[in-house]
Picture 1 (cartoon, rainbow, N blue to C red):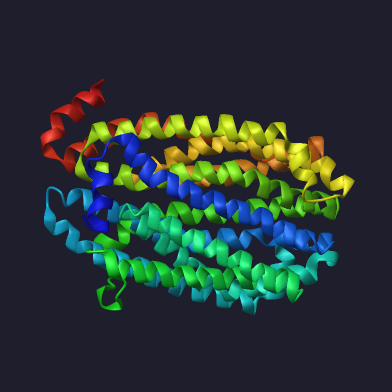
Picture 2: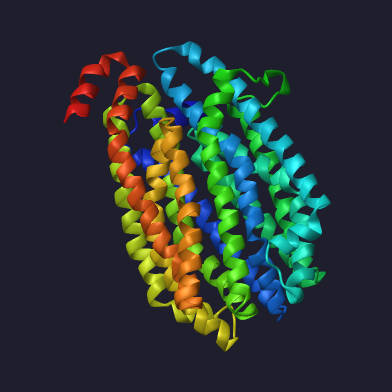
Length: 470
């Protein structure tokens, strides 16, 4: 059995738990390795005994949102469409021929968009750093970090897009290999650039860019050798509406989510900056620690998306909802065990990354708030994946917008009424409200999803309509 055939079996007919293990465990492992790297990276910078370095990384966080915005528009939207086409091809083999147009459009568009955005950012570097909220003490280091990251935006966007396309084939292990390759390379570059050459945040950014360049090469090589239908050749690039519209229909949700995340971080940084570099440094460390359980949960919610999309394209209602239920149970279990453990030992974990008493004191509170927010965010992410997998653009967009729309007034009010604690807990309150919005939209969309399943496979029309009426 070839790699492509084996991956397709997991999407199509494998037992749900086995399919979830195949899709989610490698993705969760890769995400957790990435989260651990972020912690190690903070440790490397912390070893330089300069709080401004950690603050610069915090100020530069919106750039990662920018990369997700660019790569996500084409990667998530294109990947979801590719998985649906694979599912539809079980009843209409001609659908598979469209996949090469989708993959070529997604990769080359993400790269071109990265060139435009990265170039514009470099031209406007000084006002951009000011906009990020960097104060005088951290402005110089933030400028170094941002400049190098902007130069690599096309590479980072292409890497993110290619990862989604590889996962769309059900090749979760190969996607994991690419992400772990990037992480290992990143650590090696950090040792050289930060500890040996003492290039600080510029070295950290350079290492990230070069590591992602290696990832792009790996994904492109694997797809060329193993994928029967995906192609990255420019000759298959197309702007046909039946390709562009569904990709952007889902991808624009990622764009808005990332855009609002950038706004969220900008507002957060500017408000927190009034309380000094200590809270900013604490946020940088606490967020990275909280990312360990958060990224593990994201591995589940992102890993299951190809299975949901394939089942929807095939018209398999039972498989779609079985995968959704199993994923929800997994998300809850992970947060209960891992998130609970981090919460119990939060003081010990934080003390491993900073000896500054002020950073430790505020970091404990920030970490607790982040962990509580992760619970709601995990289930909201699963609902968003369902909307993306089924091509429900409007609910996906609303989910993406709701966090930013709700967060800004909540954090401003929290700062006004409670000061720094109000800022810290604003995201927790916001994530809880976003989850409630998602539940409401999911209940409202169930009939529409069932009708779409019936269209995917006419033989299931009666079953789907019965389910819609239940």
